[in-house]
Image (cartoon, rainbow, N blue to C red; front, side, top):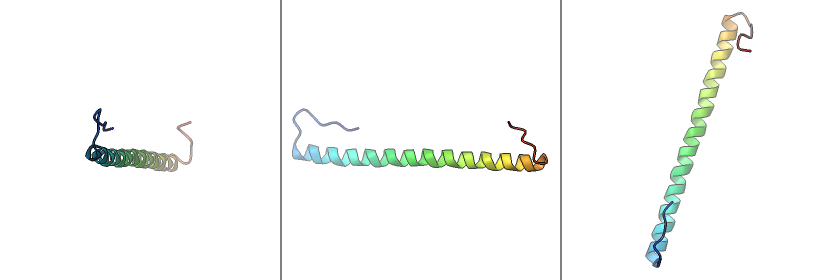
Length: 63
């Protein structure tokens, strides 16, 4: 996160708030991408397991 100089001016404060907001938006975007990726990976695994169970005649071969 951005930091302020020892004796900040109003411009420093405004720039700091803008930079902090931009960093928060970027962090939230990265977090959302990570969550979406994890959910998609698990969905693909679940679909694969279901197809494998169907292919093997319904046996639960993973457990």
